[in-house]
Image (cartoon, rainbow, N blue to C red; front, side, top):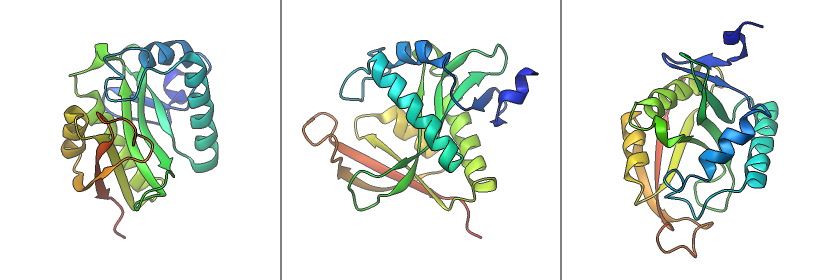
Length: 183
């Protein structure tokens, strides 16, 4: 199989694909990096990473999207995820489709999150025919909020995240959204 056949779609520098068992070790390292997990309640264990990847594989099979595994096209190195996931926690705006990203900290400040998120929005519009995409982050996560703005999203509201209600540092969140398929 030719390397590019494994990608569902590509951006200029990134390839997007479903998850493989071989992603577990690297994603587990990314999930245990305190810098990467700064705006989460804690680091994620290897078992939790396996559960996450299983969930993403199932969601892809059922819906045609997930937080996609992402590789750099120049060397096929797996660097984390960028993609779409259904959110169903109890809130006034759920259920909804969220766009999110989590990349190896060595790959930060290279424009990958913005480039990849823009490409995922294009995929959501052209292939999935979705109408609205949201993105959620704790108010203190200014880097993610900047990516949301760069990809054309607009801030809709601030809210107390029900899954973070006991975390004073993270519970105040922002919700951004973009309407992508107005036909």
